[in-house]
Length: 64
Ligand SMILES: [Zn+2]
Image (cartoon, rainbow, N blue to C red; front, side, top):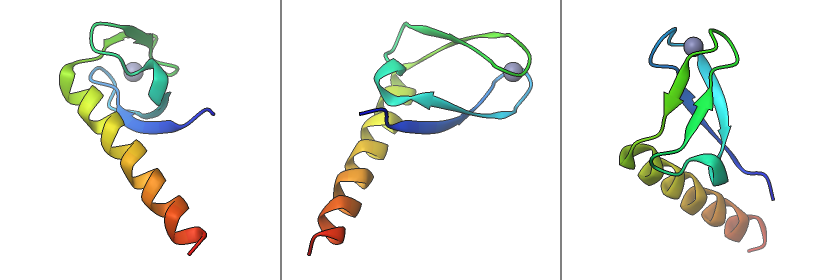
């Protein structure tokens, strides 16, 4: 499953989508717009977890 979360590039501020499984603190991703190296922090990990929780909630609502 390829769940994506949105985040802003700290360099160019463009909204980019990141696979949640890639949002591991300490890992890096290259911005698709400005090619800056984005390093994920613990905050990003929490945001990824929240996106997962929201996704699970929406799934449960779908099958009510
Ligand atoms: Zn950028």
